[in-house]
Image (tube, rainbow, N blue to C red; front, side, top):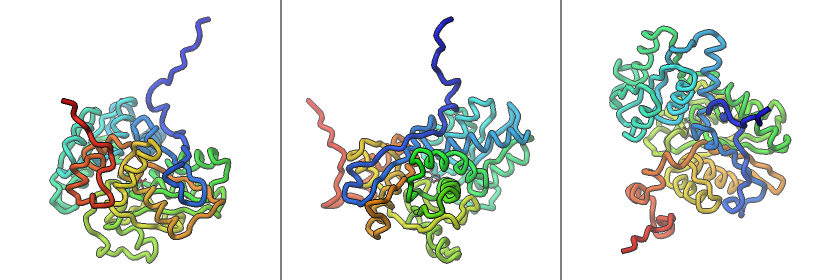
Length: 346
Ligand code: PMP
């Protein structure tokens, strides 16, 4: 008999089971051991592959989705990419409503992933019929057999991580994890993972990373939604201007806020010290880790897992562009462009 060919049946079989990679130089001066859960190893290069596959398969199990039906979501980012990828393999139409604020690169990417993209005006209120929320809702109502993913308000977002990210980390660390550090956007990653881990060991500390300009940290501490916390910031995917029901605030012990500037520099440092070319929120997560360390959260016995959400290739025209960094005013006499300069040979 011929040798069996060792191949995956399609890209979806590669979702999850991402590696833990020890951090060495970037955490040199911090007490404890630090391991990154590197989510860019998912086939869609981000943690959102997990929720895309899980939510769609739940809808299939409930009989809501059948081949030829439609997946709908409001996103221009990682979730849109992952949903489009899963839709291709499973034979669904994918509709993504984005705002006109989304870069052309992102819209082109989603289009190339086979999605139908509705570009909605950014400067209208959420209840305006032209807003991307209302457009998605309308399309969902009009399209029989469609599923509206609605990741900020969908419990299945959290469940996806409860069923996959949490158990993977527990197994990979042989139950030795003492701290989890993760970014919070929808909150699905941190709260689903934390819920599972705390069921195994309630002493694990769960440390959340939020952005300056977002309401999450204050809400966690006071249960008050304070609009005064809200102002524009640049990190995409971290923090929020509303309270997502996909976040379980009870399983998070402490939040810390990180700045656009520090997170961008830390993402660049992660490349040069660990060889990991990852996204803006990966920089934010490591920046949060450093700030928690300054507040003495760790000691020599700490075994800390940090979830790094996506790949650096999505930020070439942002944090990995010296021009963009300069325009933001992120360079000064101490922190200059730290990517090797290009030399043109004449
Ligand atoms: N980083 C990036 C790049 C993201 O797109 C997101 C999702 N908004 C997050 C972090 C936060 O993950 P979650 O939504 O699960 O809290």
